[in-house]
Image (cartoon, rainbow, N blue to C red; front, side, top):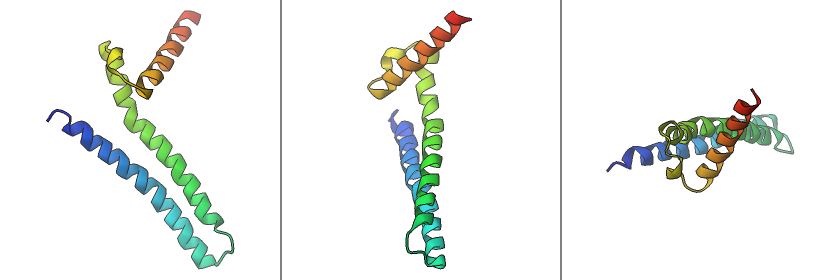
Length: 100
């Protein structure tokens, strides 16, 4: 039962991704229908804005998961892409400290 909060957080991330893409694209589609454009450029603009919002929001939601094992000194608990990302960020921090 300990994994339930993590599962709920992943569910929230999934809904955030879906809504952050659908809502701006839907608004753009609505404006395209009202303006009667031949090419749906406002829909594409809405999709682009939604993608930017989605990437930033998911990054902010996942950031605590990436920082938690580093704070506890348990980087070996990370698996897959999270471990690669953790290694990249920790190696860049080491380089910055060495340069100072």
